[in-house]
Image (cartoon, rainbow, N blue to C red):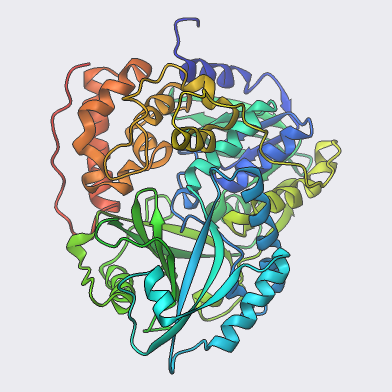
Length: 537
């Protein structure tokens, strides 16, 4: 066992533990909802196992709009509760992890003859600020707005409103919450598929787990199971005879090089075609544009993809606000699409569907779904409050910090490097990056990503496939053209000492990754990518 690398050893230990205990709670789903449940339960002393059938944050939690926001638009639908909860959780996350959940200003251009007008929008912002407990918006004249956002010139613009929200790296938020859960004793496994639920005397009492890496199956005993599988939640529930309750919605985004659309503010607008909210904003060294909101009827077991109509829809919004930019599909570095778990409330319009979460109990399978990235802590507490009696454990709702205070990183690191690495790794940053050289701490061109992040992921963060590394542990696959493959030689050199894949596995992983990027992260109908041949390790 001692010859195994840290990530391999951790996985081996987790697999050995599967059948050794009766777990207080088994959490199915390794996105932000499942991570939150595992963290909150472990923090209160429960024996916790989390299982994810693919990779951590593989689904919606790596394909969101990256916004930690209060949901200003929900006020229009009269959903004050969701907005209030979201605003307060936004403030909590910004206070606890400011390096990861960062303030972002939003600018909304006011145009003659276009809704919402100044009075209506400002009323919404006043309510928004009252929920937060402080004023966080101001009005800007035309000249001031164009100074904040040079080139901003939608038709009939006369002034603007500027307000505050926040943004994050959604996949890294999941990893940080999972790290907190592990710190408090939780066992977490990716590529561990739940194939069957077991019942004893009419209640869920365990499950069969297929470890996809070893192709071995394990029987797991559980006092209670929490279904935090997001848009896949109905698949487990209906197996127990429950009725479906979700309305899957696809949201798609495009990524532009920052030099092509250099915005310091997030630009918020109502799309001129249908009045839906669209944003574009600086993110991780690029400019992110999103999102669409469409009913999704595709196969949930395969990755969603953006459509040509969605690309045109998003670029139409950008060019309407910045007519001089003339952004075209050829400017796009990458695209991605995710499917959101929205509870079906019967509304005809997808964009008007409620975003609040629900918790339900099917014979000891506690399902938590719906909701927002921002409110994962509240979702977890609601689920555990229902699970507690089944688990025979006490659960106390509280406002304790999700994140433990990070140790001070080495003082010789540049301030920006300390800030970034603490945001990503919390109190593990100093230990995990202690051997980094000055070259390792440099940014990868065109991104905010540091080279050392690749080595840290390969060594410590359960990377089993190349897309784990480039799409979720780092975001190079959506930040750079060609999925980041132009940097393959250095990526391989940094990661191979920890992964120990060998030349044949690198070649297989590269082929798999190229196919994935071409089908799901590039413009529709883009020809297959070509790339350098991986060098022998």
